[in-house]
Image (cartoon, rainbow, N blue to C red; front, side, top):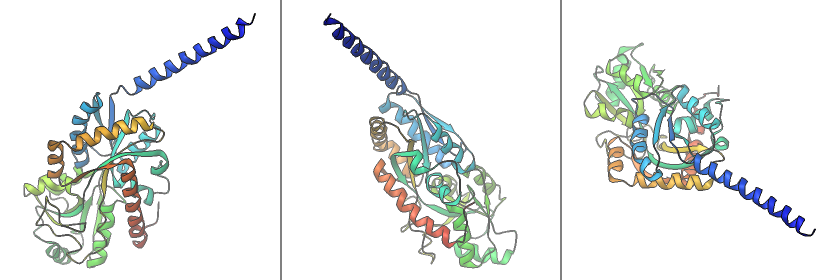
Length: 328
């Protein structure tokens, strides 16, 4: 009779072991991929190109395929909301820059996500700068010439494309208008690709966007970048001055690129993803291709990326408040 409690305990242990085995099997299966790397903007833009470079190489250290999925719309909101709803298993990631992660939560009362509560930084891999570029049909060759040209043209010629509404480029357009007393109007697009199409077609005289968005057409001589943000000139654009050099200070804090996962993703999974990203960023081919696109390449841990984002948010919260913009 004394053996019955022992038998009962053994059955309980066996059950527990079986459940643990099933859970572990499920966890392994969840990590088997493929990994979906979301981008919040259309195919053909700078962010999309960056994502495809990384996705192609991440498959090797992760051991699974990595597929880029364009969830374009609302400045990356759709992709961010999709990430929030995704299972925290490491199979759904979001490659994003500052606009969706930092700026939208500052300008929208309810973007549908909270970057700090709903996402966890996996790794950062680059910083970049935004700049002012002139379309081929615009005769100006410098910022000073552009200012003079807009002043002579009057209304209608001060339309400046920006890749998303309520974005850093849009605020930069507003500051330029205030600084030089110009009638500049920001024209928001659904990403950099359609904005660039209108610039190449001379439908708009200028655009503000990231160097990766502009670099290829700049090299081809189809557009002319005349100024960039940051505290120093960019290696990819050594002849283009900073706004600070031209007398417009306050835009020295530069944006970032990073990879984010849903909150609740196990630390072991985050560590695996970060290690894979570090290996890919260290590849000479990847470093060279991203640098050629105008990025300053450098691996950041999840913690370093979080600190970078918080500092950037502090800077832009002040700039946005000073502009008089009210969260919508």
